[in-house]
Amino acid sequence: MSDFYKDLVCQKKFFEQMQGGYQTAAKAYESAVILKVAEIHIDLRFGSSRLQEIFLPALSHLRVAEPTGNSVARHTLCLWDGASGGTKIPRPSFDNRHFTDRGDIWGFDNSVYQFAFLYGELSVNMYSRQERCGYYWVDDPRSLPYWCAAAPLRTLLHWCMAEDGRQLLHAAAIGTKDGALLLTGRGGIGKSSTALAGLQHGMLFCGDDYVVVGLEPEPTVYPLYGSAKVHRDQLAHCERLLPCLSNPAGAADEKAVFQLTPAFSAAMPSSMPIKGVAVPRVQDSESSFLDTDITPNEVRNAAGLTTVEQLAYAGNATYAFIDRLCQAVPGYALQLGRDRKLLVDALVSWLQAPPKRSRSAQTPFLGPQPTAVTVIVPAYNRAHLIDEAIANIVGQGYPDLELIVVDDGSTDGTAARVRAHPSAKLFEQPNSGPAQARNRGIMNARGEYLAFLDSDDLWPEGVLRELVRTMDAHPEVDVVMGWPQLAQWNMRSGTYEYFGNPCEGFRSYITGSVFRREVFDRVGLFDADMNFGEDVDWFARAGERGINVMRIDGVSVVVRRHGGNMTEGKNLVELNVLRSFKKALDRKRLASR
Picture 1 (cartoon, helix red, strand yellow):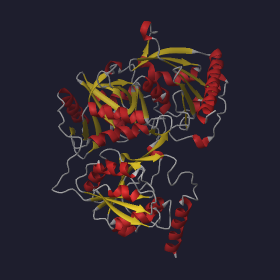
Picture 2 (cartoon, rainbow, N blue to C red):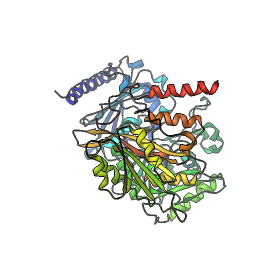
Picture 3 (cartoon, one colour):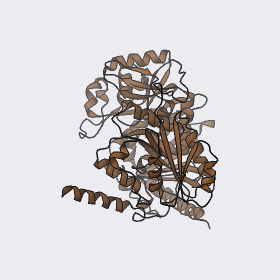
Picture 4 (cartoon, rainbow, N blue to C red):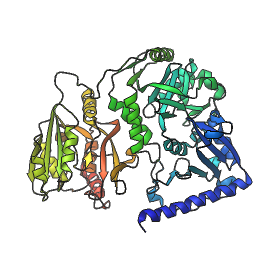
């Protein structure tokens, strides 16, 4: 029996044990309601009165009567806890090494089952795609953090929506009878404050943090939670919402939560057509406005990264959905001023007559001449991959590009493959390791900016322009980088599939970054004595020298794991991670003498 089917048998057994746990709890207490989420009916069953008290208020605006005819419930979600029902979940057949911060369990994302353990709330979530049935368990509801009451069952609802072609997004949505503006980006940029300003000044509201989006027959946003959250220092701007405050005695670091229904039910439509996607940016002025000073890639990155880092198993399908959304509706930068009434007036005016964007997919460069960039690719026995890597770099469409490939003593004809590309400069050396290969490229580069790509990694479309554009706009910055998205080769599908949260990946990753050339004069080259871990070592030295690193909110490189990676199967010692830490400690000791 293959490992896949062995795992599937274990997963099926665990799912059946989850079923049995709920059925036991339901003998003591069971209550059911029907929700209509983005036109999809969900049978929500509680085997715990306490969970019902905590979770149902934020979902109450979605309650409907029993569906009939063709409107039968598409999904069933069953909830119970260990404290009131007295039932515990079985111990899973894997240990905590399989867990990720956003909840993924390696090996549990397949065509049959999905499983997540959410550290923040210590809950277990499991869903059967075949049975369209999910289970939620927590040991003691009294230990749940405050945000669970504001945005309950996010993981299970994400999986349900995905099964029916919808996507849960980390975004806010505010609008009028003319349509909605979707506000996206990572936390703290003004999504919630903008949405709640609109709600208090008469606009329609679809959510301040999480919404559901559908693309057919047209891009449409649906409300998910009838609640909203803001930092407590924003309460002075929420005067009309104060009667809805559900946690007035919350701790200072606990966001204020408003239960908006039923008081604002009339301002929460069941759906709104999406007229645009905007990324908020705080500016130092009174007025606010939407403009086109943002590229399509920036909009996609803002929506994609913040969603993928929060939802278990979000990956290829999530990125593809967001790509389709951003192709279907225009993207903007929302320049946020201080006056909230002027902000609302600007949004209402824009929605009445949203201007058409004529910007092309590739962002034009400002100034007479773009900054010269040299891309350096180390390659050792990569004849089967180097063509794709070169095509990926050239396909970025950057107008002033030098491409250097350093063949590190390959024996498989890699150099011959490179010579077939007139756009690439080839340097050859005896096998000395990737650090020395990169150093060879640096010493022969003409570009003012330097970038690196490993031959088995790929850059997302347009990312080089985004990194350069950011560097040009911030002369005080020495390195601009994004986040690395891991992709695993799936032998069954014959494709690379994204896995894991990019923000949990390697924080010091050479590829997917742009460096000012002179930064290597200040920090030094990569340590050629290290075949692995040279990136950790270099960034450690850069930190010691006060190098200014800026990170964009987006995936800047896809790191493909295929079994032939140089780092495959290496432990921390073999990867020189511990050695790089020791080098840093040695430098500190020398500096203190």
